[in-house]
Length: 312
Image (cartoon, rainbow, N blue to C red; front, side):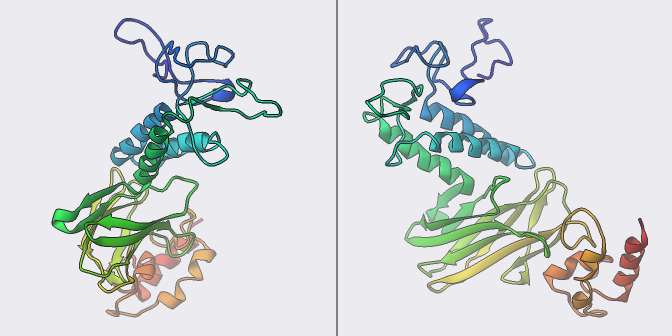
């Protein structure tokens, strides 16, 4: 597909476009002549909306198995390329035409080929492709909303409204904090209000130290796959129409409160409010200063922190 190896028959027939106006779009197959415009930048075929989305979705699904954000970024990139090529009412088509083809007088931006007969294919799969960022698996028989949100690098938050599980409707926001305290979160709004369980995987950088996991501010059980950075959290949603359930995963290096990779005076400014004292439970946001760790932030933790601040 990418031309990095020969196929079973010894041929090297990439269907990825490596240059020109079709850069990084994907053809249907090698030497596809269906509605192919020979004036385009690739003599061996034209890129399709569907095949480019399929390619991106492969990486979106593969992100479940890999750390970081490289795969979901690839998926987002393919969708961005296609969104730039939809028509004036937001519809795509089967194929992406070269910009110099089939122009009407005064038109200089025609890129949709075989547009109307099968636009439903591309548009319906656009929805599937967008839902892949939420990675939603409905489980009405077990009364459970199952998700595994994946935020691309350029996104700090995303919201899906009216996610359906049987008769339930739930709004879901996945977010990553900016600065202190460092956490990634899922916020569930139970629009219909009845009892429903959630099952989510909240992603953090692979190998990160998990400082605390909370549900509506209270410590909550979890499991952690450090190799992929997935924190698995399950439990009940708060009930009542509009009730919210805020699931947070606090992570990072102890002492680095703002998560910028160092321990300095900027971090120290957050320390004094966290001094709960011996045996007084510290908040989840203050777990970054619980060096022992024993659930509180006291002078013993300060002694460790002072040494770190004094170290160049």
